[in-house]
Amino acid sequence: MTDTGPPGLDLARLRAHLDTRLPGLAAGPLRAEVVAGGRSNLTYVVTDGTDEWVLRRPPLGHVLPTAHDMSREYRVVSALHPTAVPVPRTLLLGADEDVLGAPFYLMELVRGTPYRTEQELSALGSERTRSIALDLIDTLVELHAVDPAAVGLADFGRPEGFLHRQLRRWKKQLDGSRSRDLPGIDRLHDRLAAAVPDSPAPAIVHGDYRLDNVLVSGQDRITAVLDWEMSTLGDPLTDLALMVAYAQRETLGLTFVANPSGAPGYPGVPEIVERYAERSGRDVSGLNWYVGLAFFKLAVILEGIHYRYREGQTVGAGFEQAGDGVFPLIDRGNEILGEGTG
Image (cartoon, rainbow, N blue to C red; front, side):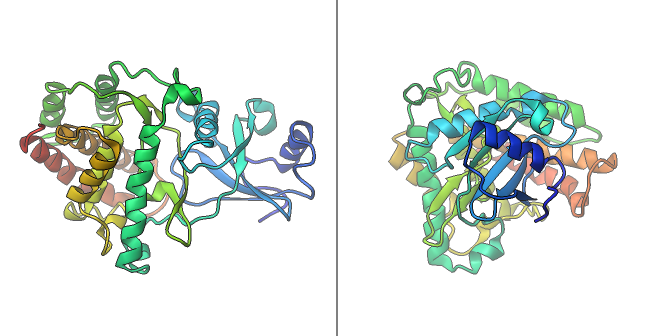
């Protein structure tokens, strides 16, 4: 950690703001470091030498404030804290850009480990891996059981037409990054568009629910669900379907993406779906459509990464593999739609 603070975090301005808004919170000079692993918004651990907190802000030089809405993320985490869903306790929303040059929020630091790879889980053994994965499913059930109105989130999204908007959004993303022939992707989109199901009762949807977006305690329990930037009110089966899609990655050869679901002890897709259905009481007979949508979404995301790599807009190693992962995602999406949607 450094006394000057990492890029995007002016510690002197932050300290002055905290002393005004939360007097007495910080007792000593502030230091901070960036938390590795973030994919969009920036996350820092801030300390005064005694206590530690977490600060979230948009990436440097962001141009789309709506894509990095700190107040929205702060609102959903604050609303969920009194519920059974494990989230950090929020402390402060800094909506004034004069402090850090962008909105931010501060929350308590929750201890836990983010498991991102098969190797990390395998080191725990199959019994512990299974326990963690089952808690991941059960925590999703808890999230979807929260009554949005009861926690002040009745207006957090527009559930009507949610699935149609999802398809339009990801098709627009695809059109913006398409630079090569992608056999089968238009067929996948058209098949999805022709059979959009009626959604069940809306729920709070995380939007990117997977193992490396949660923290796990030494007792193999989830201590916090993180990264709520894509959360909204919508169709809860989209969260389940994304979990199912990620759990199939070992069959797709996606070396670009870490795959914790391949570790011994991680439950297979049928058990994941059965446990969610049994504990949530939701009808999952039409889940294949949602999983097809999840594969379409993942294919679009990887194609976007591939496009930015070819344009020289990525930083770091490994991006050259992203493009190869698009094709099996498209194939699997079409394949699963062919298995019937209930």
